[in-house]
Length: 178
Image (cartoon, rainbow, N blue to C red; front, top):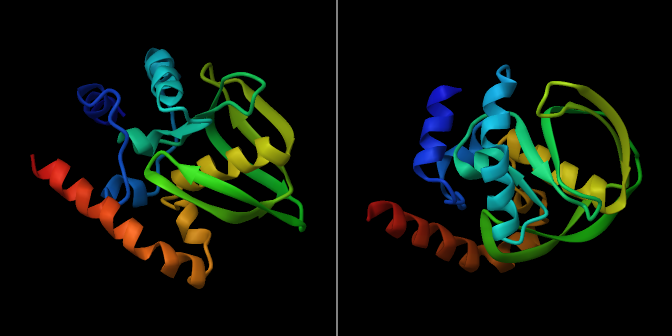
């Protein structure tokens, strides 16, 4: 974990974008909660400064299983999350992502989910999330498994966004070459 955090501190507010390999890696469980607490404020500021409602650790180069979210009811740090139950019924809703800037598309998500996670102190929580909160949780949870919202799009939508996605990846390559 130390190396993950060192790399993140070297690039404090740099959000990783489409094409960055860290976004496609499966994250490892958090075992040292003191280190998560140590970066919590910077992580929170990064999410809000980018106008995000969620931010997953891989999006800032940390391959660990935690994310932050705010569905309008306040900031929450979610560590080592699990989706333990979900509705069969799904609903369509628009999503965007800080790691896929400027791209928005409708994605099907479970209408409700029952989740278990730890907070930044290691305390376990279990909740039933519905609507917007469930959507944010599912979106951020996907990041921990190397999945982006664009992976859920149908072929027609993905094809219509292909040029835009290609441009994002080309710009990332230029930035990382500097």
